[in-house]
Image (cartoon, rainbow, N blue to C red; front, side):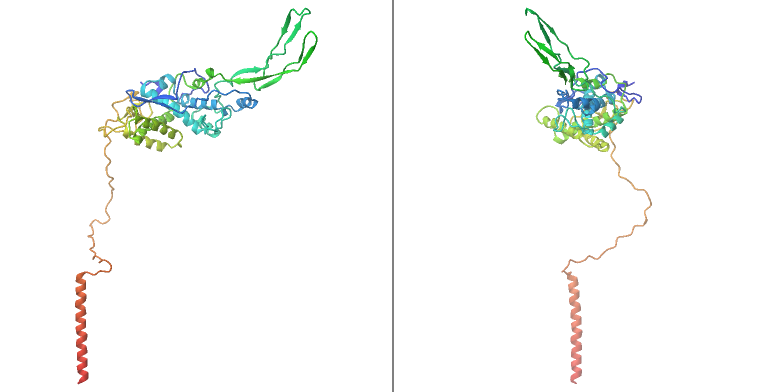
Length: 441
C-alpha cells in the first residue's frame, strides 16, 4: 500500500488563500540531488522573493486598488503562484518538499520551477524587470482565469496573505490645553486621540476640533486638525507569509498536480542530463563541472520561458535518458513519470537495460525499483511489405548500345567508313573511263 500523499486523489479539494501555518523554507538556494545515493551540486536560482515585502504605502490610490484589484499587487501574484505550485498540486512540506534525497530535491525544484512557470504564463513582470511595480504589476486576466480553472479554484479567491501593513498615524494626538494656576506653581494637561478611523482612505478629518491655547496673558485660537495614516509592512512579520499558502498535510495529488509534477520531472532530468551532454563534462565537483552547473541554470531558464509544447517536452526527455548512468527505475509517486536513479553523465555503453519512459504503477514502491526496465530494447526490424508482385517473371534488362563520347569515333567505325569510300571511288572511276572510251570511238 502506497502513502496517500503520493497518489492521485480525484475527490480531493484544498482550500485557497492563506490557510496554513507559517514555515521556514528556502526555494532559491537548492541542493540538486542527481542520484539515489545522495550525490548533489548547489545552485542559486533567480530570487523572486527579494522584494516580497511591500514598500511604504502613503497613497489613497494604492489603498483603493488594494480593496478593488488586489491581484495587481506583486505580493499577491506571487502568493497565488506559490499556492498553485504546492497546495493546488497536492504537495505539502514534510512529505514532499522536505523529503530526503532525490525525492525531496525533485519536489523542491518543482516548487521553484512551477512558480516561475506560472508567473511566465500569466505574463507577470519579475522584480528584476524594469516594468515591475510592487503596487500595480500587470498580468493577463484571461490566463489567470484559465489557470484558476486548471486548479479548480475560484478566480475571486483572496490571495492577500496580510494587510497593507501596520497603521502609523501622524498628528494623531489632539491639541493639548494647558491650564496654569494663578501662582504659576502647577499645570493640568488635557489630551485626546482620534477614533473610528476609515481605513479605506489615507487622510481623515477634521478628526479633532479646534481649540485655544492660553497663557497667563493671552490665548491662541487653534484650527481643526486632520489625521494622516500610513501603512508599513514589517519585514520580519511579512517576509515568510507566502509559506502560509503551502499545504500542511497532503491527502493526495490533484489532476493539475499530476500534470504539473510530470512536467517538472521531465525538466529536472533533461536539465541535468542535457547540461552534461552539452558541455561534455560531469556536473559534480569543480573545474569543468562548473560549466555544466552553469548550463543547468541556463536550461532551467529556457524551459521556464518556452511555449507550452508537451510532445516536444516528452521527446526531449526521452532523447536525454540515454546519457544517464542508470536505467529508468526511480519512483516519485504513483501515476508519475519515473526517472533514472543516477543522472550522472554516462561514459561509453552500459548493456542490458533500456531507458524508455515509464510511469509508475501500484506495483512499484517509492524510490529505487530494481525490477523494472531490466530487458534491453530489441533492435528495430526492417519493415516488410505484404502483397503479390505485379510481374511474377522478372523481365531481363535490355542491353543498350553505348553512346560514344561527343566529337569522337571508335576505330572500327572509322575503318568501315574508309572501306566504303574506296569502293564508291573505284566505281566512279570505272564508269568515267568506260564513257570516255565509247565517246572516242
